Image 1 (cartoon, helix red, strand yellow):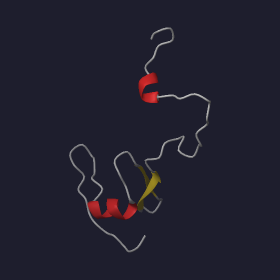
Image 2 (image 1 turned 45 degrees about the horizontal axis):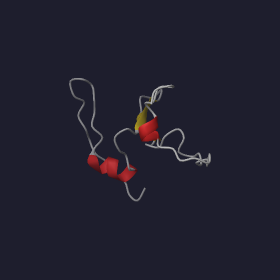
Image 3 (image 1 turned 30 degrees about the vertical axis):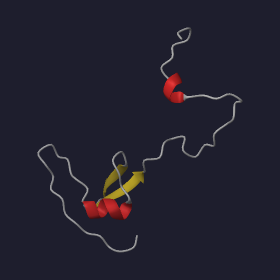
Image 4 (image 1 turned 60 degrees about the vertical axis):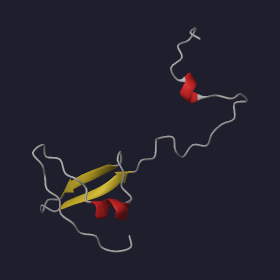
Length: 82
């Protein structure tokens, strides 16, 4: 991180909070990212980004199976249905 960012947010009626824009920018947080809330024995609260928007398979390399595929067209096909 390049510098210290500090901000406040309000807990709404449904107990949701909004991550302040300055914090989102500093940590590159986007919709779909996850955060972990941790409360220590002395009552200190910490929040940590634990999962970025990368999928479970993002570190896998593609494999050439020798034929062209199109997941957008093929994913809803039912065997025997054309």
